[in-house]
Length: 265
Image (tube, rainbow, N blue to C red; front, side):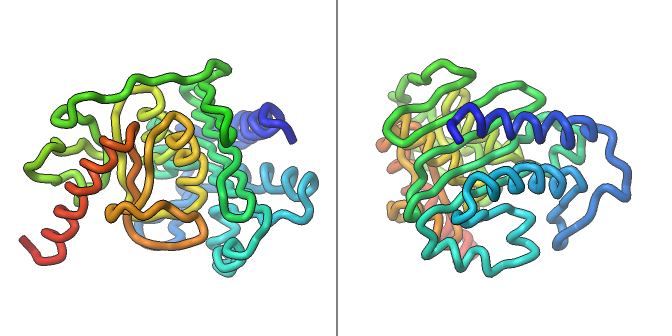
């Protein structure tokens, strides 16, 4: 499938099973997969719509859907050796969706031998699409992105979890809370609204598309100690920033924040 066909599939899923339920969910439409981890009928139906088409088009590929993986955790083991895989987040930011907040997204990523080669983020309520292909840059609603590099590290704009928000001193100012949707946070970096973001959990469906896009604009992503992100490995904390210099400053501040939390100081 070409990049437009995949985006059209995501839009079809959003238009047929997600948006009709936006601000129209009943209590019976919402469940908890785990305490605080919400899933809705729209998540499950959206994933089904997307996975059915991908399974037909790519019968030999591993399909790593968020809800499918919740039902079968062995999928995350199989991604380690998969030559070809697709990651699907049918609704990223489900809590926002449940609360009637338009900051949610549909995300799809394509991996070859563990490397991201294509990524899509569709924000249905904002009607904003970001698409990336390795080596070809990032496009926002059809126009190639070229965002300016932040030059003053003391003015970096961040969005992240409560722990990493308290960077405390150094060059990096405290961050604001995440939007609650990785797809929106990554899009904000691409669109020069913020300069960096960080997440405690690194589920591939949350990060494969966005991190490819950050790389394609000349940014940097990885662990707080500087190691690169590998979508086949599960580990706490992943950071991304609009430039390598910004990443290095944020990573140093994040390491300090994590160390303080570990010692209770």
